Image (cartoon, rainbow, N blue to C red):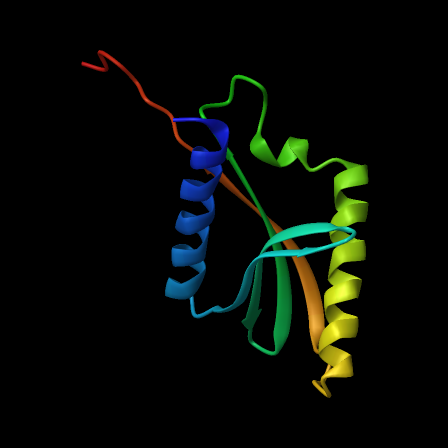
Length: 112
């Protein structure tokens, strides 16, 4: 399994988790000239911009540690672009929140 396939598994898992928690998935893999947002979801009168990081173990640290300041800036610019798009369509701009969901897939061979 390559990294892209692993990322898709992580994003699918995160989307299912969010749906089970009552989030309405508005968009997945939203792209514009500034970047990409993995999941945009609506929950309790708040629009959530969600970055999903999936790793095979903690060998390189926690997955959220890869959401660096430059990555955060790209996500913010992409979110502003999305908000401007929905405003132009006449939609109300709700409160917003940024989240990171970590998915760690770790295999323990010969565990017992």
